[in-house]
Image (cartoon, rainbow, N blue to C red; front, side, top):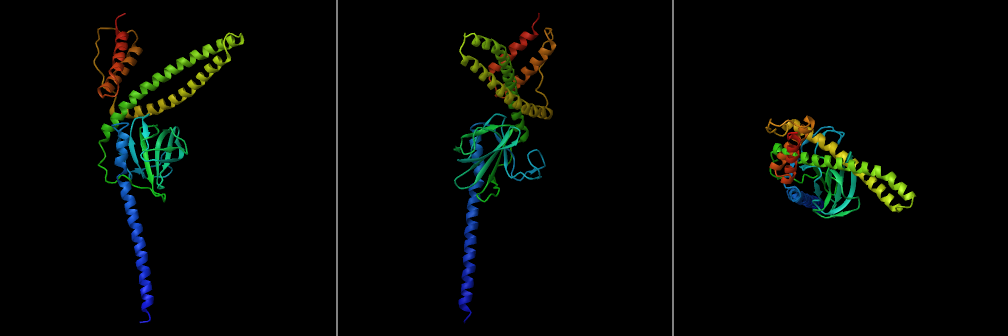
Length: 318
């Protein structure tokens, strides 16, 4: 009988500990349940920017050693495929706590919510800085390669599988083929931009000595020279970024051409001798690529018509 108070106290402690443990487990379960539906919701936000976006990498996919990681292991995140240059929206509001270089122009942007959970968006060219407040749907950066990598951690720093229960992965071939065609279109735009920037920079470099001479003679104000120099410096920076993007796109496009093959070639008339074989071949390749992109609904008809006219003029009789 004398042992009963001690036994009762012992049992009370056990019940208290079990109750606390049950409450923690219940809270953890609720916490995980909240996260489990987040990927589907975020994907719907991304599709408002790029409707063909699709999940192509899973939380438990195996990753080998690469330029992004020193050890092999699970992915612990989700990849959403989108073309290079696509704006990537935040899925959750919060504060940007880190903008870290991953590789080259690729960055990881981490946003912490008021609950303490963190989401890192990888492979981006950033549009935000550390300390910025962002709302769900606000652009954080643009896709540097062909997808964004989303990783989530709970307030304790543990990786969270926030996409359980999502439907099965889409057919990757169709998704990547769409990305390939989009990258082909973007590559054309970047190449044309580089060409235009180069021509403008050469023009400014030829003009600058003349402007300096006119300034020394008192014909033009000093700010005219300064504006020209500023434009030239801006062009140099833009050209460097464009060349970097072109190099990334070329690697993607070359890789995908090996997988899918070149765009289908169309039969051309043999009645007209081309003015220049190299020019004709280059214009034909460009036209084929644009025809393919137009059929996919990625570019406007005007771009195809301009390419058709350029090719017609190049292959017309002398």
